[in-house]
Length: 157
View 1 (tube, rainbow, N blue to C red):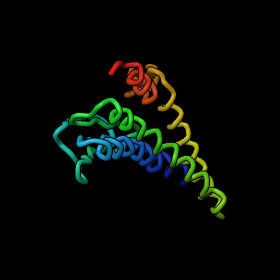
View 2: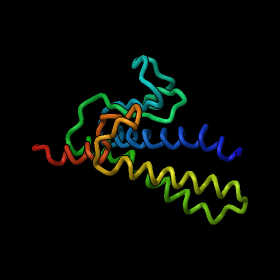
View 3: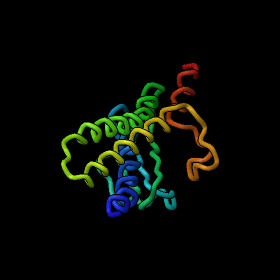
View 4: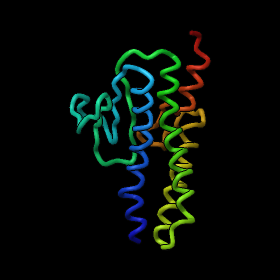
């Protein structure tokens, strides 16, 4: 029971935040842009929780997030920015999966397994090029990261 509570209250929001931080880090490392990492609804875009260099954080406890960038980015930099989120989700899925055999406690194994699975699903759901359906709540109607990359690749330079 405690593992389930920890998973829903901490792990899902933290994995979502890490995915968005992946976008932000990719943006600031590949360009001169400022990245705004959001966890939760955008209420006041100028109100931020804190910043680390050009990474600005706008945090509210939530299961969804997004990252926006302000500043000039060419096509290659935008693709790198978009790929950053799914890449972090994939790396976390692999990392938590690799930690699984090291855990001797059943609750820790369960938490690691659930976290690895969530991150793997997050990677797949964001990397596959789709427009999110209505039942996906705040993501409804938005293109996945994979679809955004596909559109950029089809775009003439």
